[in-house]
Length: 151
Image (cartoon, rainbow, N blue to C red; front, side, top):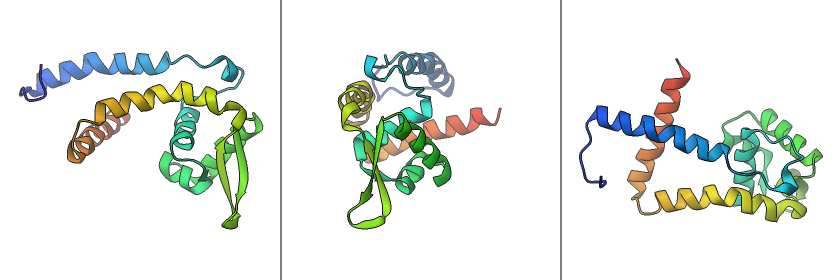
């Protein structure tokens, strides 16, 4: 089926019902590298680590905004990962009141090899699309999340 084939709503729903469990299953099967297995990493930590890996170093507020959580929630997650040695915190040289969060050098390679696959997968899937098509994909997935969250 090419992207230009029209899909009825029912056919689109059938395709997604088949696809979503596969996507979730693949994400859950991402093998945690040996170096990170001893840490108690929840799904929310993966999102945080991915942002820091791709965009870091970031401030607590920047991470909270990206994760769509309160700064106190982001701060607790960062503290948890810092205590375990996965994240490193240091003062921002441009503004000493701000703290920058990065992946600890000792874990950078393990985190990058682990989470880089999802990054590569999304880049391959979203890369050929126009900016408008990418926005439509994200909007659609967010609408689905909101619809099932209210059930």
